[in-house]
Image 1 (cartoon, rainbow, N blue to C red):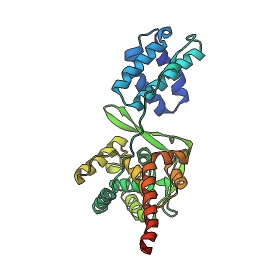
Image 2 (cartoon, rainbow, N blue to C red; image 1 turned 90 degrees about the vertical axis):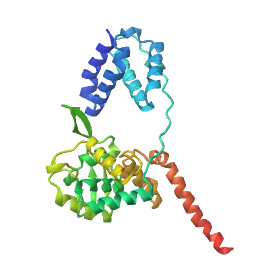
Image 3 (cartoon, rainbow, N blue to C red; image 1 turned 45 degrees about the vertical axis):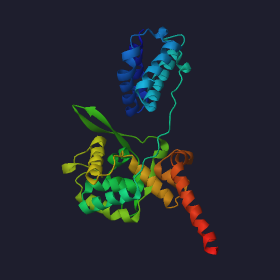
Image 4 (spheres, rainbow, N blue to C red; image 1 turned 135 degrees about the vertical axis):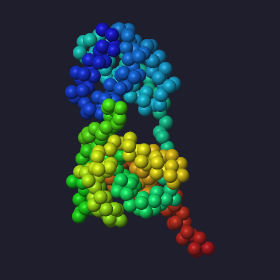
Length: 305
């Protein structure tokens, strides 16, 4: 059997029925675009350690580490399943070496950039833009924001319940929103809303014609890509250097640390599996905060001199 025949069968009979829709779509895309063109014609028993490692080295030169890791995951899962089910006697995916992965530096807005964005949004009074404020003060992921419904927000108790997310899918020449369950169990969470944000949420709800907190004209659903574009245009208008939408989440975390929020609380609000993830990701912000606190303490010595 050729590998392309097996990987298509594996996607249809193992991944699609048992995994989340987003995982199936991602694995299918990886298989179609990155694996089958190079390895699809191989007979299963000819996918040796050498063939797999040479293929991995080739894609490592062309793609980022996260993409390569996704390819290796599909290779390993599909070939291991083939061995378990007796399609092949032995598979060699365990010998694949992962590329080195450098942790991306956390990108966030400066305090001045954040003030500039907030002042512009508040001055415009456009409900759609208030979603950016909401992310800056709750740390919501963009998929969680676009999936958020008004029923998920308790404006009397100042709470947001995160119980779903969404992702984009390309259909009929455009991106459409696909609703999904949260990424992990810890992603299900309740986030307290800062008191100062409540008036803007009330204004958003007054203007809204949709069950969704973020919507387009006439209450129509919008895609993640569409809202990312809204943020890009805002940055361009304000002449702020380009940053991805995820920078809003990082900005929230950085400001929270600067305010003295403990890592355990921050981790739960962000929906991380454990505080160690938060510590690793925001170690630079934490160190800056620690230095500021130590210098504040050091002023006691200066006052005594």
